Image (cartoon, rainbow, N blue to C red):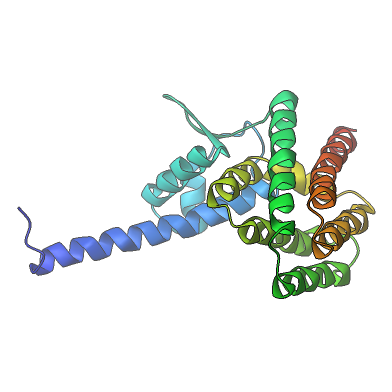
Length: 231
């Protein structure tokens, strides 16, 4: 049985925490590379290449890839390694429709309990998105994610929020591409504004419709973006 007072035991614990922290940093960077398209769907993760690029051993990279596999962004193929997951059109549509339903439900719940301070937070995020330079999706996308995340958090149901975030992670690439097409940022934020207006009116049905419609419109934008990308 190990002795917690033993310096070797403490060193082992510190090393474990350091490794986990490093794996988290590596995970965030690989996730960014997937979202930005540096790592393509169906592409094999080059562990040696990433190890050299990020200046870490292969251990944290494997741990990060395993975590991303649990999130649905990476697929593990036995005896072959880690591959960037490619969603079929049917899978992406199913996930998007489910996400629309959950997001609409959270907005409906939030309309019944939202405070003036919470409305102010959403208005600040709206303003930030309005001020972002036209077409600068790299800056817009994180604020967009925060806007949606805040609505999930404010709704006050951790289970729904967890389910919603799992959909968000799997659909990152499709959503990012959808926002990368011309004029889309302005249209997306118009829909965000309608959601906030409905929430401020404390109207559950209007909030549900505005939130769900926003996601459903995003499905169309993602489809158009894919066609543009292939064209």
